[in-house]
Image (cartoon, rainbow, N blue to C red; front, side, top):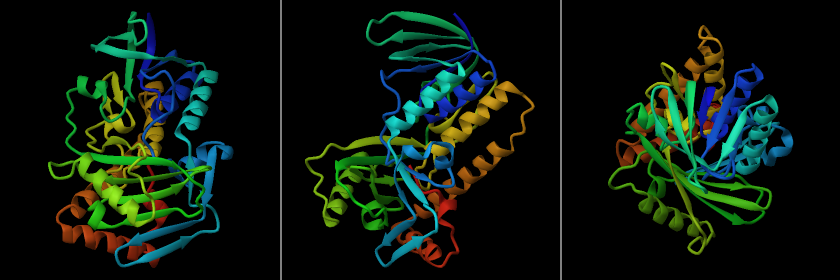
Length: 345
């Protein structure tokens, strides 16, 4: 079987890419190794000026015109006339985007895993039956996350990886909180994100090292959550590596989008919005090789700024502390715009 563009991964980036390609009449196949689309370790927070403007309002579980930023020295309340951030259910978002892609004419195969890649073909295997198919392509798009098989085929290393851990527990809270506390999270942060009938409680740290592992972050997260009145020891945690080691997105007939390209924010861990933007821009580049790269260039510049800020703030415990307090002070006095940080995951 020959398909013009094969997309590996049915996350937001892959589905955004598939929809635009299919709308332009390009035969497109999305391969997803999971049986269902959308589920992922994710706090589900999206900035109002970013992703939420691209999805139906009824996908927002809760919307927040007020944000609370809490450090070891400060508590800052930021309020806007309209909602700054909303929370979404990743499974519902994935289902919505998959339906859009299907209606545009894309094909989606779930429960199939890529086993082999070469310059002109992929071999995929159905997880249930072990049946195999060979597909040739004109273009291959890797939208398969931080541990991308397509990225590994391109021999790109992952030297900048963050860690995100999330607990999704029952509850009905009304206040969205960000905690910049270097005692627990170094130069990362903890969050409390209310959803419709659950609460996401989690933490992100920009860089994995021998002393900053998933186990270390989980221990800190449990201690911090306990100090906020949440006993999470008997709850189930879900963890994910977050790749922000961007080394390019165009490689001949191969493309990388989202976390596979390392386009998640090193500073905040946000991945949904850059995945969608890079997926859309990849589709437009496949359609028109002379496509203006201005949107992608702006995304890459912002990514580079966040990476440098993450590296600067990780220099020492004193820098962790100073960075958190300075950012919060800037937010307090309007020097830093909250939406410009796009602090969402």
